[in-house]
Length: 55
Image 1 (cartoon, rainbow, N blue to C red):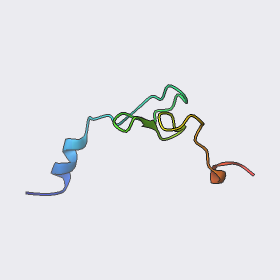
Image 2: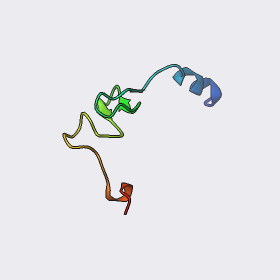
Image 3: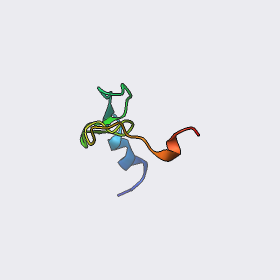
C-alpha cells in the first residue's frame, strides 16, 4: 500500500471550483457553496480585506 502518486491520481478529474455568478471568477466552491474571491454564498457584502487594498 503506497501513499504517494497512486493515491493522488484518484483526485484528478474532479472539479471543486466553478464559475461564480456574482464576480465571474472560477472561484465558487461546489461543496462549500461559497466563493473564495468575492464571498458569495457566505456574505451579502463583497469580500475585501485591508491588506488587499492599494494605499
